[in-house]
Image (cartoon, rainbow, N blue to C red; front, side, top):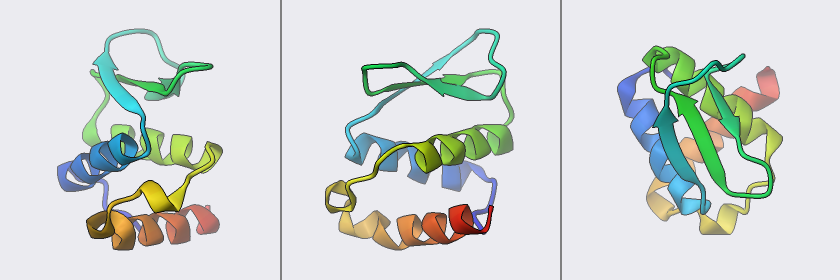
Length: 90
């Protein structure tokens, strides 16, 4: 299980960056805490969401995209392995 903390959010931000995605924190009316813009590698996160909602939203997006694990830095590999285990139990 991934803790819903600022540290996890920081690691997710680096993970998305490693995967070539750009994270933007914007205001807006989202049904969830984040969305991915079609045909681009931009993820828009609701800046007014709580930290735990931001983490959950980014995990949901990770679940729905194809991840090239070779792009993930060695430092984040254990974190991503933990994410995969978490996603499998959802």
